[in-house]
Length: 331
Image 1 (cartoon, rainbow, N blue to C red):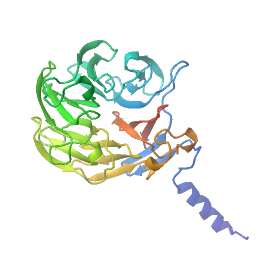
Image 2 (image 1 turned 60 degrees about the horizontal axis):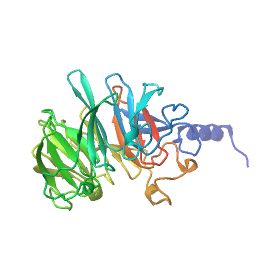
Image 3 (image 1 turned 90 degrees about the horizontal axis):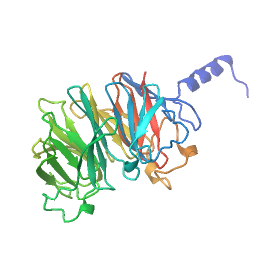
Image 4 (image 1 turned 90 degrees about the vertical axis):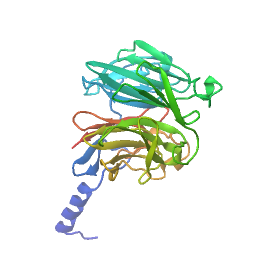
């Protein structure tokens, strides 16, 4: 077949412009405009003797260090911004590492770690010093036993009140004051307004004129908003599959979605972008624990948590047995 030089050049240009989403490739470009990112797979260099378990939580501290919560003996692993391993701690979270919130009070920073397997939430320093442990809410009449309580994530309001989402237990939200003293509970399993079905993530949304609570009502395939006193405000139902958790930056909401993508909403909860969309990946045999050769650069498998850094880069951790940490470098 004869190919003219012009046709050949056009073909090369088209190939160069195509998304790089083939197996084995080292990078891919996602999004567009101000939300264009380079997909950097397998971010972070693990030293000998350290291996990921299920990667469940991620946060950035004031020193720009990246903290990863995962189910291994190195349950809280800390990296510098270039991905160099600094240290780790938390072997007691090996079986239950799940949600992780980093909250700053004045010059101090604290972690709130949710452990559904041990039925507790712990508040710690960034170095792992245990400050308190909050166990199942005996004050809530819905609970008769500790094993009914399986907290998945935590939020902290501007006044210091603490909100715990019992995502894997009885689907309630529990509110405490800054001293971890019980205030109230609301929710319960269902699909009506105010009811929840796997409230997996919880966040204090400060994008509006007053702070509200937003819950990733995962098995209802929606977000649900509440006042700080637990009163139902409304739903966000569009452009969601199985939302897991949140981060917030410059009026935008970042939503890792377990069913193969990361979503960004604007201040009015309108879609800005779906990143790394991998339709029907959840129907793959063995999902989410699919082998490395089936993990496509530029597409997600099971995003479980995500956060922005100060430069607008995004870090995504996925619910996969051997862990998966991806950096979306803002272009």
